[in-house]
Image 1 (cartoon, one colour):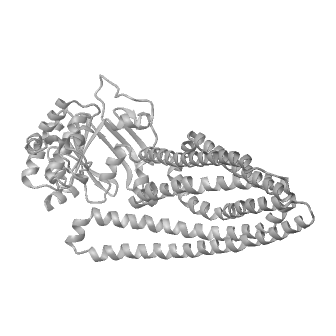
Image 2 (cartoon, helix red, strand yellow):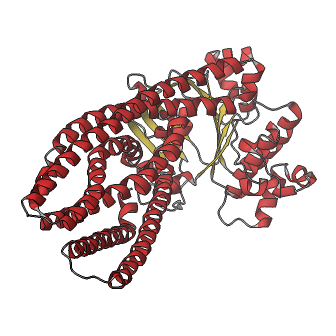
Image 3 (cartoon, helix red, strand yellow):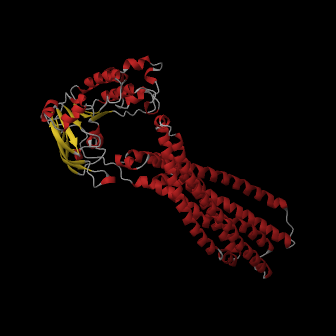
Length: 567
C-alpha cells in the first residue's frame, strides 16, 4: 500500500505545488487591494486601469492553478486506489489456504470494496483538504506575521481548547467506525450466504429467517451510524462555536492596533479577508483527526491483509527429477497436523503410508476422520506440524510449491467452475493449450458431444459456479480439465457420489481413461468404487487403522468389513 502511494507521489507533489501557487495568488491579490485602499484613503490619486490588468492576470492564474490542483489530486486518488486493489488482490492470491478458512467471505469482500473506497475518500477528499488547509494556514500566517505578529498570537491562543475537544471526539468516532465495519462484514457474509444458498433457503422457507438476520445486522449498523452522526454533528457545532472565539478577539485586537497606528485601514481590510481564509482551515486541520481516525480503521483492516505472510514458495526443485529407480510417488512418516483454531485436536495423528508410482490407492473412513485433510496436505495447502513427507523421493520442503502442485490433478465431488465459457473453464488446466488439446481432453472426458450440441458450443457461458449445467456435466468438464493438465498424480474425491446412474457411467468411463498409467489417490465414501485399488488405507481418528486390498480387508472382518456390510 505504501509502495503504491510512493510510486505516484509526483502527482501529490504537483497537487501541493499548484495549491501553494493558488494561495500565493490570493494573498498577493489581497495585498494588492489593501495597498490600493490605503492609497485612496490617504488622498493619493489612483487609476483603476493600473489595477485591473494585474488582477485579471492573477484571476486567470488562480483559475488555472485551481483546475490543475483538482486534476492532479483526483488522479492521485484514482491511481493509488487502482494500485492498492491490484496489489491487494495479488497478495490475497498468495496467502496461505488457512487464511481463507479462518476469514469469512464477507470480511474479505468488505475490505476489498468498502475499506478501499474509504481509502479512496481519504486520498481524494481528506488528504487533499488537509494539505490545502496546511498550505493556506502557512502562507496566510507568513503574511500576517509580516503585517503584525501580535495578530497571530491572539489568533492561535484559543485553539488548544479545540485540540482537546477534537481528540476526545475522534477517539469515540474511531471506536464506532470499527463496530460499523464489523457489522458490514457480517451483513455481506449473510447476504452472500442467502444468495449462494437460495435453493436451500426456498426449499425450507428460510426467507424470513435470513431476512430477520440481515435486518438485525443492518439495525445494529444504523444504531452505530446514528451515534457516529451525533458525535460528528456535535463536533461540527463545537468547531463553529470555538472558531468564533478567536474571530471576536482578533477583530477587537485589530481595531486596537489601528487606534495605536500599528496597522492601516487597508491592512485591516486585508486582515479581515485573510482571517476568513485562515480560521476555518485551522478548525478543519484540528478536527481532521476525526476523519483520519475513522479512515485509520479501514487502513488497519487493509494493512492486516498486507501483514499476513505469503504462502511459502518452497525449495529449489522446479522440475520432476528423472530417475531410473522405481520410487514411491508419495511417502508419509509420522505426520501430525492440527488446524490453527484447534491446536489441541490433531486431525492427522502420527500417520504413515506409502503410495507407489503408477498404482491406485484409496483412503476410506467415516466423515471427519481426516481424509480431506490428507488431500490438503498432499497439495501443500497446509503444512504438517511434524513428520516427513516425500514427493517422488524428495522432501516436500525441497520442492518449489508451484512445481509440486503441478504434479497433482484434482477431481472433486464439489466441482468449481468459473462464470465464464466452457472453453475457458477447461483451458485453465494448461497454460497455452491448443484447440486440439482441449477438444481431445473433452472427448476423453465424454463431454465433447454434449458441448457441440449446445447452440454456442464451447463458447457457452456456464453461469456462476456452473449452475447452468447439471452435476454430471460439471463433473465431466472437471475431468476434461484434469486430462488437459496431464499431471502424474490424480486425486479423486468421490467424483461420482452426487450424480445419477447414467451420468455416473459416463464419468466412470472417463475416469478409467484418465487413470491409465497414472498414480491415483481416491477418497471414497462408496466402497464399491475402491474395489480395484491396489492398496486401501482405512482412516479413523486421524490414524491409519487398517491396510490391505479389498479382499484382505474383508477377511480381517474389521472396520472396513463393517463399512462395506452397511453399503
